[in-house]
Image (cartoon, rainbow, N blue to C red; front, side, top):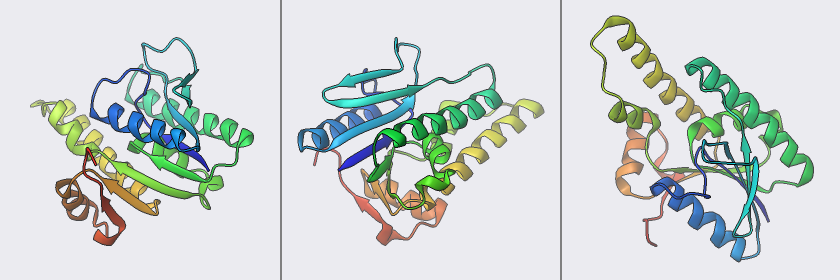
Length: 195
């Protein structure tokens, strides 16, 4: 089976839990004989746009971090461009999304409508944004903050809605998906970390 993972993190350098989960999933599937590819952002520590890591193909697209607008637009367009290039080389049987921005970009493509999709939800994007960024007190920055949070919520909800099933690492995250995004509980599978 040809499996494509779409993420905003890289397995070349495990910095936290999201990278660890992605590394374990991709390398274990590769060890079982599947051809595994990852589409991700080209991060500052990457020296190339492609790397084969433990028999997993990691493809990277450029992003423009000049401002929020160029970041989002370059993420969507470059992720889509790379997806099209990879899908010309291989027939993708399954897509596993790990973060909402790459999922959003790929789900906008008509070509992906018939491909089975899984969303691995580590945490809710808008909550992560809110916990990492203090709410500003001034009007303009506070408005930007609210737009950022709202956009993340909408993008993630859309991305998840396009998937056949959602995988979470805890009942806590499952409950949050049901509460905030009204996802049917039977569509969510809990696979505890360490299982």
